Length: 175
Image (cartoon, rainbow, N blue to C red; front, side):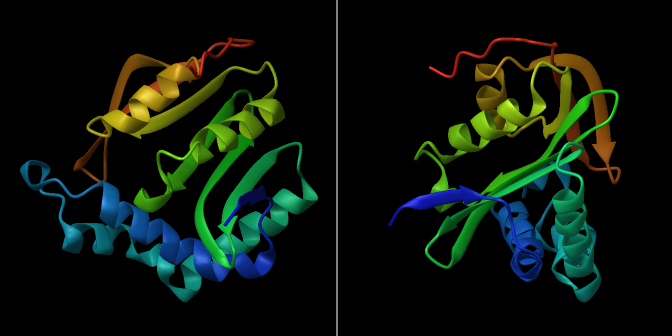
């Protein structure tokens, strides 16, 4: 089945929150950091609640109204959503969140999403946060010209993230 990348519809909100939680459960458990399923559900489980779905719907509708300021694309395979990439434009462009299910990785989908995002962002400087032990994501972002700045944060006191940026008009080499 062909994977299609497109703007989400408002009714996709009901699937994006649970998808975000599922990807977190696939990606972030790490015993030595005290990040297990219970911690993830406590800190990210709200994305799959009525309130979380309502926030997704608000973002999707805002992105429809302000496509120059807000970006969001989903990856569809038939009726399933396999992942998404969102972003926003302020003084810099912020990439995130970007998530793909494990089953969708390694098929070029992330690169296609990134190409659409970079076309939307244009030559603006960009930034993102990535978990420091998500080496696959770090390598992916490096291929597109992002570099670690040395800035770090502990999200909710536990999840170690690093800041990556991409200079204005930076070229990418996704090979």
